[in-house]
Length: 431
Image 1 (cartoon, helix red, strand yellow):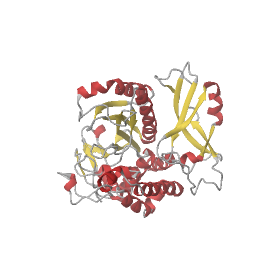
Image 2: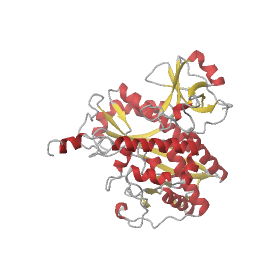
Image 3: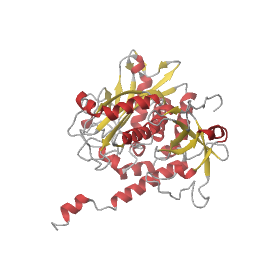
Image 4: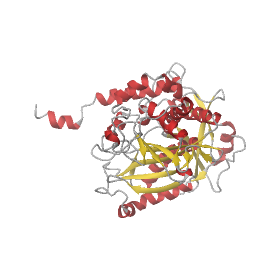
């Protein structure tokens, strides 16, 4: 990017550079600092298969990259200035963008789906700001179970117990250029939430990808395994990814009027409501993600909306004009932030362009709101709705859409073909 300063911090001997893959997992390479100038100028080759592998790194034959074309390369270029990683002296990290060998964007790069919607918003005169809240578990790496016990939500005693690992996560990720606002214990043993300050949507999505990677690294250094898996324990709270949306024009919040949600904001909510079911697969990419969608779990089971209500699918926060926003609450912490934000923003912009009014506002228990549109509560229903959505294909791009849904279908088949320990325990001896 012309004019961007990619110079290395003093004392850097190694640069880690990566981007988000098809699942929003950060993948890339490490380079000696002596090679950095060449990378900035010429890029670094990496297989386009990075955008086609699944979360286990299995490589699949896809319509865009396959055995027929030999899984060709793309080039990675830095998009942010490298910053030092405090826990690894001499190592700097930066985010990358992908460029095809033809010097054009890679069609199956998830980042491109979000870029297209932000360009559309800009044409409408808007900048999209997004704040993200991600929940995750800190587990014993030997047992994959929490080291602590009981629910300590918001408890400062529990926070102090975890400070030896959460403190570095807050401070050192903040030093890496991701502005952390706060952390707190969540509604299960081992579960925590960390909030990232809102910013321009593409930067917010990039930060989610890097944040999840850095959390895992810092947790490992502190003797824990961090997981953003949606529902590691069925009987315990799931891991959510709450996204807070606002549109800005001429330096002002376009959703706000006297600290209240205005007509533009309501139309954005109307668009979200209309498409929330179709884009459920972007919010919960695996069958496990739909295990979160249980009544009275603080994960929504419909597309209801309301003011400061944690039982609805779209929670409206009011206050000062700068604070007014729409929080969409259905996504799981393992969601690809590019597809999630791109689809949500596309739906909201449709609402504004097409004058889509939201349904009746929920003023009570969102789980019992009979007027609210339904959303999928299982993976098979979500995939079926996505398969029937030309709109979603247009948002994601044809090839990216196909790769993403093929993976979702494989995951459904894989989970359905397993005999679980619970089944064996209940049925093997008794029948």
